Amino acid sequence: MYNYKIINGKYGDTSLYDIVPVKAKGSFLIDKNNKHYLDLRSGLWNVSLGYQQEIYTKIANEFNNLLKKQLPYLDNHSFKHPIYQETAEKILKFVGNDFNNIIYTNSGSENTELSLKLANYVNKKGIESKILAFNNSYHGTFFGAMSVSGIDQNLNQLFNPKYGNVTFIEYPTSIDNENRILEQINSISSDYDVMFIEPVLASAGVYATSTEFMNKLIKILHTNNVIVVFDEVATGFYRTGSRFYFNRLDHKPDLVCLSKSINNGITPFGCVCISNYLNSRLQKSTHNMEHFSTQNGNLLGIISASIVVQHYLQHEDKIKQNIHNIESVFRELLTNSGLQYRKQGAMLAIKVGKNQSQLLLKKLQELGILTYLYLNENEEGVSIFPPFNIEPTLLKRALKIIIKYI
Image (tube, rainbow, N blue to C red):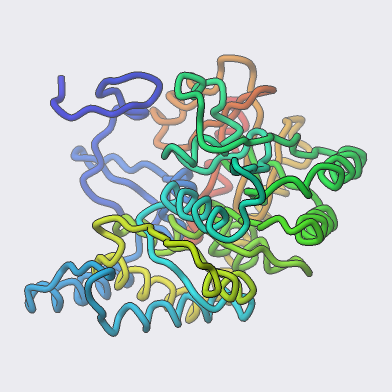
């Protein structure tokens, strides 16, 4: 019995795994008995770059420098500091020229809350906020975030009425569905203020559309004066193969939500990137605007993001090659496996039988392999989001074991 509690289906202290990691190295978590667990899940839970001593040493040194000055914390609503601007410039350089400002946050869930507010401030067309989102999408667990997350609507019915008037659109799984859904959105979108888009449904089991669909979707939304929010918390920072999913599109979103891999899980941290167009509209808005939390200017979070983004910039070619190698392993072992699966970059979901995902998760844990699970209205399975530094031969051995037990 523990005195700290978590809420994950119920109020209690039960965690997904009954292990206690005491250290980590490379792509392994290690418990007090020195048992090594190959971590194939933490790419979804912040640690895309794996457990690299080089990164941690740099961050520890910078943290130590700040702590020696007794200055670990400032709130950026009250103070300025050079690291605010330096990190913003670095993130915007990484994100690209379509965006010229960011707002610091603490998480992906907070990003959603902030994006809802920004859309409300500049684009609310009626008395009530009207929002589009995909079913089975995930945007967090704060009040606004759970309002627009399609995957958890049944779980969150207790909290009705939720934020705004949200219409959930079917996420297309075929070209025919794509055309039908585009027609549907085109017919209704002029009444809506904003659409939240998870470009690849990560938590729901790695569903992806064609890039042609996403281009047409954004064009329709912009034609109908709908703000487009891309939630790249799970898909950003090379997880789909490019820096961000939106990089492959001709039409760009207005807001991009980033967190998780932005600082490899070192501290709670996130940001919302604001397009040049929307930045201009926000500056002209006459609304009295407000959004902040106590930790939005936390220097430790911002420094850790600065160092990690610099690592991405310096090692981009190697990271892309590593993701290509991961994709090659997925393709080699699964193409003729007879299993139902979906993959996108270094994201993989494998379908299992009903009520089997938890059992498989525990069996793999016994074998020293950590995966995650997904559950949507149609199926369940295991999710595999390996760290980018994983050795291909190691991934291959683990995936063979996973396939065998499925």
